[in-house]
Image 1 (spheres, rainbow, N blue to C red):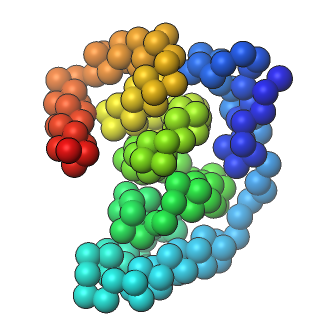
Image 2: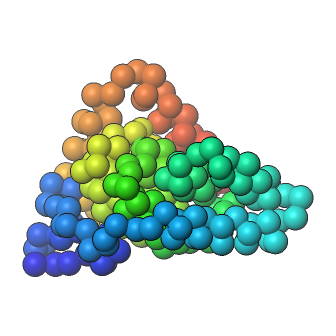
Image 3: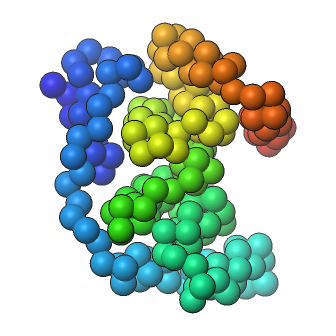
Length: 195
């Protein structure tokens, strides 16, 4: 049996990765203290402030700290994940934050948080990890967002897993028209950014 990177908590069936063969294994993390989540968030916010004085990253950091006392730590972590490269340096850093936030009180982050982290994974060409994140999100009830499905389709395409692409396409075609328009608009913005 193949074992995915330990941080994903996934077990893969033999041969190649396919969304149909990914199973979520019991998470190795025990309950996380809320202070651990706040500590990690504080590190990320402080770093953003020192790197980008007066810039967009500093404004994002100030926005998050402005909600510090009124918002649960899982929602603050979600805001950091959605901010992407403004506050995070790498996919691994985002994944660490996601795992901490979800381990704390068994919180489930939104599809937007997963989608943003999956985009970081795509930029870093971590295609298997992107598909693993989709499996994790779906097992927790948040993986059917248009952005997450789109990132997963692109990752499956990059790996040459046409069966996964077809399954993801059928899932996306089952969405409502407004959700499809959102996904198509996101894809268009991403393509314009790559040019």
